[in-house]
Length: 254
Length: 196
Image: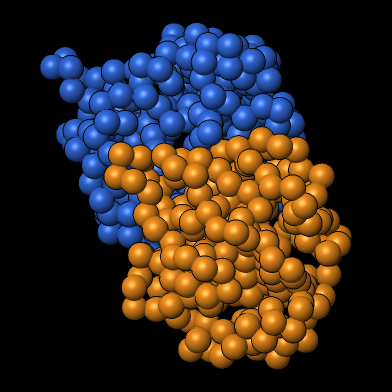
C-alpha cells in the first residue's frame, strides 16, 4: 500500500540549518548533513533542503552542503532555493540532489519547469508554491521568499505547473508557516483535488493531530515540517506510530 | 567491475553513490566497450520510454542484450526494468528488449499519477535479489507506467492494481522502485546484486 510521506525540511542560510517563524527570527539548528542523517534515522521518508537566502554569492556554499548531505543519504533528497535556470538545476543534481524545488523562477518563466523536466524527468521537478489567504478567501501566490505578491491564484498556478511538467507540488501556507497551529487543510485540499500529481502540505505542523488532519481532510500525499523536528518537539518515529493508530498508512519500520 | 549505463535518461549520481557506499567497483559509462568488459551491468533511467531509443542509436542495445544472454548479472532500475519487457503504452513506436513477456501500461485514471512514494513489497519465495528482505518492506517508487505481473515477477506492489515491483529470471533482474533511494532495504537489495 502506498504510504503517506513525512518530509523533514532543512531551511539553510550560509551553510547552517535555521528556522524562523513566519519567515523571520531565524534560530540556528545545525549542520545540514548531520540534521538530514538524524532525520532519516528517525524515520523521515524524504529530506528537503531549502536555501532560504539563495543569493548568487553563496551558490558554492549551497552546493557544498548538498554534496555533504547527499553522500550518505539514501532516501529522496530535494534541494530548492535560488534555482533560476537549467544550469542551476544541473549543478544541484550534479552535487547529489534527486529533485529540485523551484518557486519564483517558475512563476517568472513557467517554461523552465518543462526544460528541467525534459532533461531530468518530471519526477525530479517539484514546484514550490507559497500562498497566503486573501480577504475574499482565495489564495494568492507570493514569490521571493514570501516577500512579493504576484496577484496569481494558487490553485490556478498549481494546475498550470502540473500541466507544464511538474512532478509534485510543495504547497506552503504562509499564514501558518512556523506557527505550529496546524496545516491549512482548506488550501491543501483545494490544490490536491485540482491536480493529479502529488501535493506536499507545508506550513503549520505542530502536533500529530495536525498531520492526521492534513492527510484525512486535506487529502495531502505528503506533509512537510521543519521546526518541530529540529528542536525535538515531535519525534518522527512517535509521529508515525500515532499516524498509524489513526489509520494513516505510513512507512514503518524504516 | 559494475557498469552503470548512461544513456541520457536522468541523473545517475544517486545510483553510483549507493554502489560506492557499498564499496563496489563501479563506473558510469556510455561506452560500448566498457559495457562489454564489465562483470555486471546496471541499466537505470527515469523519464520517457522513448529515451530508450538512445540505446539502439549508440549500439549499447546489442551490447546489453549480449551481456544479459551471456549470463552476466544484469539489473534494470525503473525505466531500465521496463526495457526488459516487450514495450510500453508510453511509446508504441519502439519495442523493449522482450526478455520478459508483457507490455507496460499506465495506471488507472482514478489513481493519481505518477505513483510517488514508499509502497510495500509482497515478495515471492526464492528471489536471489530480494534475499533477506522482509515481507512488506517499503521501497521508494516514482513512475507513471507499470509492468504487468508475470511468471518472472519476484515482488509485487499495489497501486489501484497489483504490478511488478521486481522481476527476476536467472541472471536478469529488474526493479521498478529505486533501491538507491529506499534506505536500508534498498541498500540490502543492491548488496545482494553485488554478491550474485
